[in-house]
Amino acid sequence: MPANASPSSRSAPHCRRVQAVLLGALLLGGGVREACAQGSAYEQLQTFSGLLSQIRLNYVDSVTTQHLVRGAIDGMLASLDPHSYFLAADDASRLDAWRLGRLAATGVLVEDVDGAITVQSVYPGSPAASAGIAPGDRILAVNDSVVAGLSAPAVQSRLVGERGSRVRILLERGSRFEPETVSVRVKNEDIRPVSVPVARTLPGGIGYVRLDEFMAESGRELQRAIGRVVRGDQKRLILDLRGNPGGVVTAAVDIASLFFARDRVVFRARGRRRDVARDYLTEHDGPYRDVQLVVLVDEHSASAAEALAGSLQDHDRALILGRRTFGKALMQMPFLVPPNADAVWLTVGWILTPSGRLIQRRYKGLSAAQYWQMAGHGGAAADTVETYHTDGGRTVRAGGGILPDSLLPGPPSLPVWWTTAADSGYLTAVADSVAQSLRSQNLDQERWYTSPGEWTGRLIPPLLARARARLGVRGQLDSAVEARMARALAARVAMVLWGSDADDDLRLRNDADVAAAVAVFPRLDAMLARH
Image 1 (cartoon, one colour):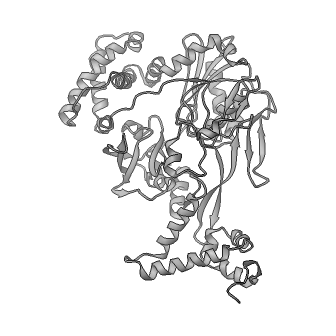
Image 2 (tube, rainbow, N blue to C red):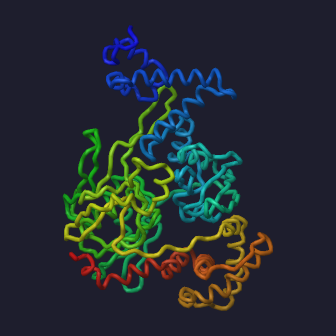
Image 3 (spheres, helix red, strand yellow):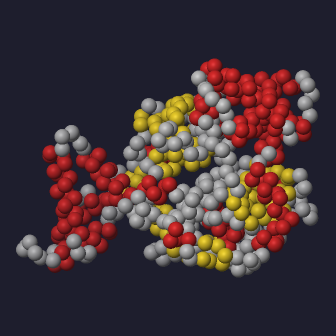
């Protein structure tokens, strides 16, 4: 065939030969047939094949075809969007075993943030939580194997194992320029996550529920929890979505259906596939559609949590308080990649709020570093120009994530030595020692709940003494950091003295975001009105 023949004139056998090579698997079969009809795609595949051969023959180090192809796969998916990923069959098998209960876990969920495997959330009460691991911590190594270059799901598969086994995790915290590192050993235990770990009736008859994750049964679980905390004429509820990483996005429909009448749009999905592009509507009249609602969110609220918050905001159904949400709302589907039962999760759709706002932050035209730096801070400035309106006429903007109706300051960051102290048992030792000394004093529970000055005076000095003697800690604590530490230790004291419910009760009674939510109820209707 002449060298200048057009790609469209090449014979069908050429396309079949291209499909036969490994790249056919990379493009998921049918994509190669489409490529053959798209001008220069065939030549580009030839270029790739030639480059593969040159590297294998001439590169200074020995490299395997598997290594090169995996690098090509990762690069190809990275060129699409920040959240599509490839998962090798062995990693997928370990994660499936964990989901089916055959393997235990540490309680950490991770995400790739700016090229670093970052803790997205920690299950309350899990071994990871007891070890002091916190959202935002960056994982450098697992069991002495560095994780650089691995995808977040691949690292997640290494954080599960046989019940009772331990995982050694090297963490980094703080500035990328001057990070602090700490190594912790975390036990794998059976973790049965529940959607609603905390449900309380606060003073004044205000209900409070914390929704930690969107799972298949989350709607039913939340309905039962609300029924326990919202009674009689006191129809006021705080729904806490802080730290909620999302999950099953259709669970957002089940939950929204608790608060809306039938046939209200919860969110809109848009994509190339007909089975993706549709509006998701409530399926029945909700039992709590007349309950006054305030929703708490933060920079770790993502995916389905953002879809729910955006729907409640657009329909003027709830006031949103907190920090701008993460800005991740893509619909993804898994596809098998032959011949080894590997899998690729591809983005097939966008999530839009009922008013048409795109929740997902912009990534086209941005480097990976730029994209992840804007997590919780909105998208590019140009994205915020277009305005949208709620059902009642309030102005809302897009720009990535959900911007709360009322912004609240976030908590201060804890120093890295706090994690070392937790992993070493110093935190529980200090709190338990203080609890034992208070037990003989017949301490009044209500007084302890409302005495932050006493927490600081009793708990911080012995903690710092241990940290300075055994961890080499130097310097003074910022007052805000000191207060956060004292509150955490005081909650442990309450649990030792009065049981596990006392831990959550103390935290709730001294949570600045919850206090702000309680304070808005007298003027909630006015704040949701058009302005």
